[in-house]
Image 1 (cartoon, rainbow, N blue to C red):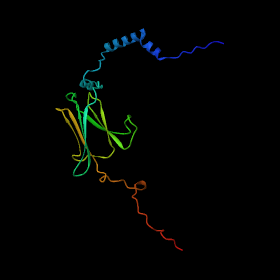
Image 2 (tube, helix red, strand yellow):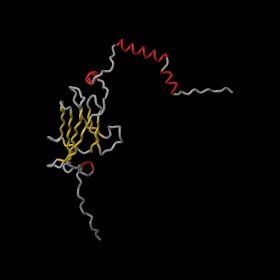
Image 3 (cartoon, rainbow, N blue to C red):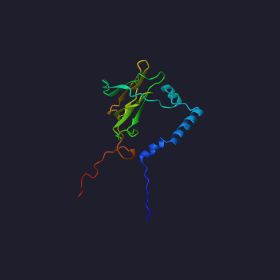
Image 4 (cartoon, rainbow, N blue to C red):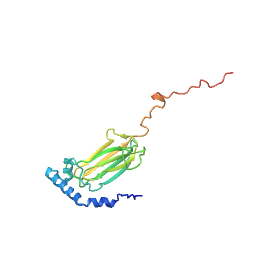
Length: 189
């Protein structure tokens, strides 16, 4: 009976192939072709990266301060985010956006929370987990500010007062819920 030989691929085979003569020749050929075609290397500044449509090298997380407060007149809860971007280049302005708990892929989705994201090149994007309550976007209740001199981005938001949020009517198909009348309250003999 003939003996069967089995070959198994090991990680060392892959490493050996990458260090082989043909692999090195192919890398050199590819570098020469890219140079001949004029494909530029990665830009070295955030502004150049944005102009080229590429993301630049991230330099870390920005500093931040979060202040919780309550409006004395309306009793609405408020959050003030102050994010420092000292290395932000001229002409680059930070951005913010709200993200649903179901959009993110870092934690298990929780319907009780949403995320507020801040991004500015060349920093990493930072996200804050905030309650998933309606945000009051009325006059003077939601604002953002970018101070180009101190390079600080500020965002203040107010959550809507739960008593001012109208509940949806109860009942089927949006019909208003009717009071049950006592038609059959007594038994006739």
